[in-house]
Length: 369
Image (tube, rainbow, N blue to C red):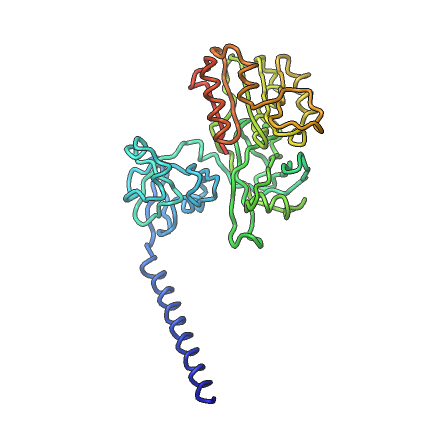
């Protein structure tokens, strides 16, 4: 019996010893093999940075105060963090290829979250990204808009003002909590007016098992301090005289609402039709605010449509898919711009209807999520 105990203790010591040796080897490897030293990073042929090697390009840029959009938080699943690498990128990785077209490969377009800075780098990014800032913000209010969408208003603390184009988005960083062992960030469109410089208002829909949406819906409290970065995006109202058609569903309301604030406040004289798709009455929200827009914008019409209305909804408005309602309300799109926000499937279907009605493809702007 004593011999068995001794043998067991010896086995435990041997396993512990092996684990200790492996841990030491990993530390040595990280300090030597993974230590790439200081690298030179040149941005747009004029912005020079000396950076620590070995990290992803996305995180390296973030540490230098240059923020590339990334809706998935750098996990390689959204394809947003593209930039042009002219030197230092190495071969394409399998994790990049599903997001990079053949033409983009010829131009040197890469996913900045996947490639690591292991040598001197030269890249090109849009100049407007140098205007993106990191903000400390306090949760001023949280309000339920529907059973699964919350309106969160942030009071900006440092810096205390933001300048953005109505329709753009910010990234919200949430801290570690019980469902995530690391801080992560996700992209959300701004729903507030661009004239509210000290406020960022978001409409965040709950996604089952979503790290950020779960935190927002079940853990976030008024008074909490979070980090935002932005503004980002090419989805904003163009300064033309054409008619405007907006189509959205769910939290896709957010950027359209911001655009409507802009049209209302600037007294822009354009015909605007907004078709909003929902399943049932419980998925509709901000109806009173839409009525205010209709009163204040001379040629604006809001058209909510239910695709799965029940008898209990007692709905007398439009029914059916947004594509069907759009086809009903748009007869000639030759003098029309379209702004779409929602799921990829919905947007792709709407684009086909728009083109069949004569809307030029270059006049169709969208934000897929």
